[in-house]
Length: 59
Image (tube, rainbow, N blue to C red; front, side, top):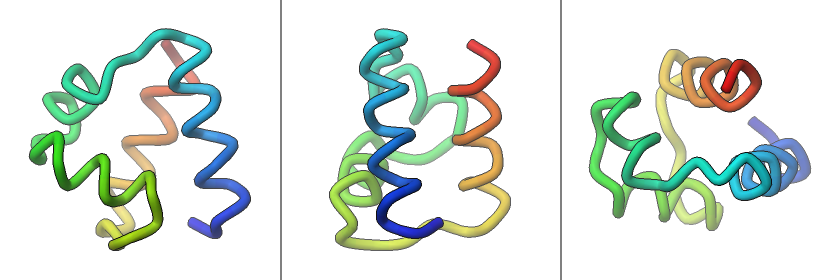
C-alpha cells in the first residue's frame, strides 16, 4: 500500500474509532507491528494489508 493510501486508512480507522488493539486482533499481529506499519516504518504481507483495508471499509 502506498503512503498516501496508508494515511487515508489510518484516518478512516481513527474516524470509525477502531482501536489498534481491535485491529491487531483481527489481523493476528501485535499492536506494535500495526503501529509501526501505520507510521510507515515497516511493511506487512499483501494478505494482511487486504484484510486491514477490508475490515476498516466494512466496519
